[in-house]
Image 1 (cartoon, one colour):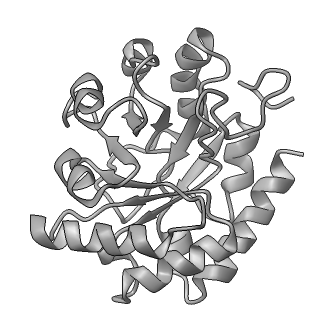
Image 2 (cartoon, helix red, strand yellow; image 1 turned 45 degrees about the vertical axis):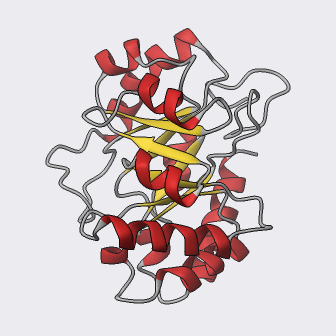
Length: 230
């Protein structure tokens, strides 16, 4: 049985919400070879993506809302939740499924009050101390990073698998069934190792959306992750 899972649970799925973080795509307009993001998320959905986050640090608010609505529409009927990075206001305006927030963004409690009980809220965890105080009763999953070096975000110190395990331990001790993912620099070459270290899922940007064939890249990652958890 994979680390962090209890009998009767499925790797990557929150038993409280049925949220599946196993193959977590993050679409960023700056990391997709200049292509239209909407067709790319459709391709990733066909390939087996289980969750999507829209991250855009450069667009104005109106553009963010328009793009978020287009992404949500593109994934309607797939069962794949769409989250907004950082911006609770955009998630509300575009009627997304939730948000992913960092340690310096709106607090999880405030995000929950605004978005409601049914929204999905994810939290970035970078240190063991943050893991010890993460509000597991408020959030739906945590992503620990950055595991490896990456060009998609300023990530000066990669924590590696040992660092991921160290930071996951306090979360596992508090709730063994709570979904804990990994982020930063994860691709087809190292995803299996991350899962073997105990992650419930991997958040991937370039390994999916910088590839020439996004559907094929996503399907390959899906196969790798399935093999790692059997």
